[in-house]
Image (tube, rainbow, N blue to C red; front, side, top):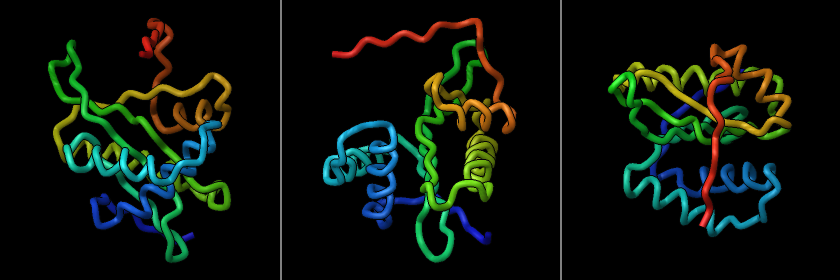
Length: 148
């Protein structure tokens, strides 16, 4: 399958928001395109994330979103691979791997020391994909959340 990957901006807001909404629905969240559009617009307006969209067969079919962080040990910028999604109709063609490879390239282009990510223990696809793409499982840390 032929495809291309593009770093997107506000010109692609509608398309990106549609994909982001589908991603959230995949994670059992309520369908809310308008709220997703507002969220993505705010990230773009404030230069808070970098989003790459993969196009196949003339349409946007997946994306990866990276948030800038800083690593206290390496004393360098790193990225949180926050969101990765490929439409179910386009899975199995290497598009997730291509998006991850593009995110790695972005790390090189921006001088980042690397990426981190988190996924659900039940995400069988992701838990097989990420090690194949060179991510190492961190069994030394517990991740905790505080939600307001």
